[in-house]
Amino acid sequence: MTDYAEVHLKKNRKEAVEEKSPWIFSGALHAVRNFDEDGQLCHVYLDDRIVATGYINTQTNIAVRVLEFAEVAIDRAFIRNRIETSRAMKETLLQGSSDAYRLIHAEGDLLPGLVVDKYGEYLVLQSSTAGMDLLLDDVVAVLVEVFRPKGILEKSTSSSRRTEGREEVRRVLHGEVPDEVVVSEHGLKYVVDLAGGQKTGFFLDQRENRQIIARHAAGRTALNCYCYSATMGLCMRKAGVGSLNNVDMSAGALALAARNYTLNGIEPAEDEFQAADVNDFLGGMPADYYDLIILDPPKFTASKKTVNNAIKGYKHINMMALRKIKKGGLLFTFSCSGLVDAELFRKIVFYAAKDAGRDVRIVRALSADVDHALSVYHRENEYLKGLMLYVV
Ligand SMILES: C[S@@+](CC[C@H](N)C(=O)[O-])C[C@H]1O[C@@H](n2cnc3c(N)ncnc32)[C@H](O)[C@@H]1O
Image (cartoon, rainbow, N blue to C red; front, side, top):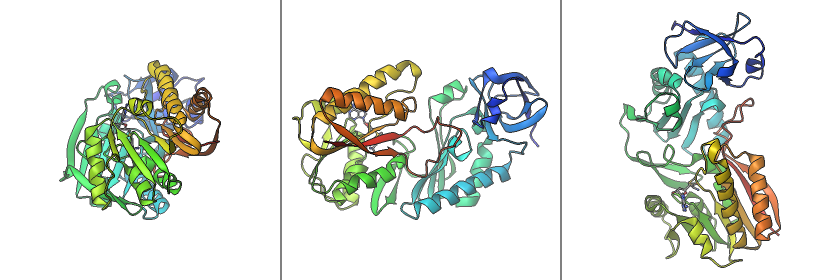
């Protein structure tokens, strides 16, 4: 068995393990013994008793990420068990609606630091910690055994790797990986840009929201802001939307969107794709024009220092969008900034409605789809939140 470091907690820090958060902060540590390297597996001791097993990084504020609240061996069998549990849960819940899903959602699937997305016969993996980097050989061996994938791509590019003392990594870990694959979801096909695309290539988290939005789209004049590859637009087209503008400032995203239309045999109208900054586009539209607007912007903040700017940004776009919606219309508004929680987002939207002079009702709270499981004890990866608003 690998040598485990010994992490001894301060006597008054029982809650660090009793509350079962998978993160133990450096302030709770009394001493670290038998330590060789950052990322090393460790046992966590409280009063000379092992209470958890995880991995340690002495350079980061999150000192230990817990894999199990007990003394266990972290080996291939352990990892296989975690991966098979997640697979069974997700395939059962998704009921064959898609061949693309998030297999491992880090802490939410009790494998901190690891994201694995499945796109048909290919897997894309992201490690965000030194500890997960050291477990990757076992993770890959298990993924190959369980899925027999044609290829596994590692795209470990998150900015948090720098804090962990790790470089960005992009490499093929198994088999061969094409630049793109085509996946199907609820009867539509989408190109996934594995090599160059945003995130691991696709916004899997919005799967269910695409369906919810489409249910309200028939006959409406709709605007899909920050559309990326126009997945939400295509769902609305399939549902018989009246007219549609898909807006994104990235030419690459719109090129992908156009290919998705072709792939599904749908002919875009002349003004259906708009390469523009959403702020400018919304600013140029008349008030009371749309029946349905979607706002799904990129993450506005990744640091506590810039949360205030993010709040202003969210408020501004929501206020602008609400002014352009007719009475009886709908706004689907999202934030994927983990630092803006659901309560704060709701307040921002409230102030946006107030300043836009619009009376709105929240008719539905929205979140990431079921394959983005969350730990009951850990709110930090609850990043995607949204509201469906009815304009009275
Ligand atoms: C979170 S993604 C949208 C995902 C999309 N709704 C989906 O479900 O696939 C955000 C998109 O916003 C675009 N973007 C970022 N800033 C923008 C801006 N100011 N105006 C227009 N598009 C922008 C990015 O190019 C990216 O495609």
